[in-house]
Length: 432
Image (cartoon, rainbow, N blue to C red; front, side, top):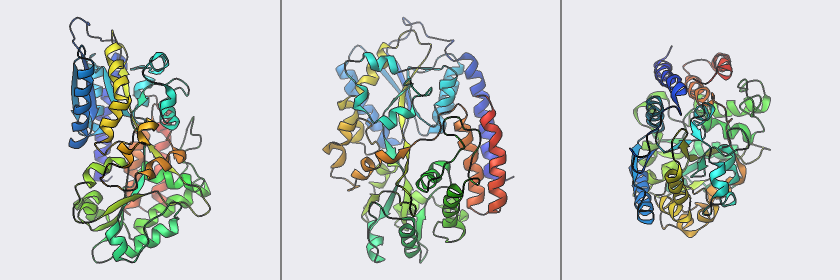
């Protein structure tokens, strides 16, 4: 048993133990409205992003002086999950919290979230047609009723060092480039202590390649009962292509080097040609002064279709609160044109409001990336992972096992077989 697996298991046990308590108490405790003034908003983000949220909160309070907002940020999504678990277990959840669609399922299954659908339907400030349908659908836990309101719309993309491409005699990536083009570029960029690609071995990174090749991660996206990484020829071909980047072609930093320096740090230092991430990377990449960089769409499988994975976080309201009016007023402002423009200026967010996403505030901020249209062009090709109560746990444990295979700690066939066997029971487990 490896260290990464043990760490994952220990952290998961602590986390699920908290969720068990939260499931029993969620919605049971509520503050007396006379004892609480204003609302509390819990969310995650780096320093640049949190600064954007603070600016938005100030603008909201100026527009709505009768509502005081206590902004309670944390740095990562894992910290956010721990904060929410503790808050629900203590009977005092925040009025509003920002959560990724791949993690909200267990809270929705426990009835801990106040559905947003009726609030949106009766809103005079917002209309469902303002937003990306794909982002909205990811937050319909029952398939029809909107649970939370998605704040952003991002996708997995390729960040590339334009200077290295030119120095290597490579043509910059273009829409429709193929896996072969991608691999050829990665090989040409890998030399003299430099690597062609930085990508983490995880479900969100693997999924777009599987979908592009006509495969799927699970047997039934609506009611998944097992992973299908080896059962489908199209899926298996994509899985092997992804693993080969490390195990055969060696265009990705090996285990020891990735542990000593992350791919993001390597890209910032100019020793990584391409880096796969979502829009979350932009504020940090904008600190680069020594070279030119830009963004491109993911490559397409031979004979396949363009595909990427949705990256989206939404504002959710805690159920069991005595009054949601202040919380909804904040969400209305945050999801309005002004609120979305403020966050777009931070660089981190692709606005889920399509009118703001298509505006010069997002597309032409006089800051890199120059090709921000790439995020909007990806919108028709975005897919989401399953909306189930157990998906967060499935993904967490799959990532730990996939990492073992990707870095060659276990054999490919043995590792993939064990992965499917170990993950299958998690689909049957009730949410904890």
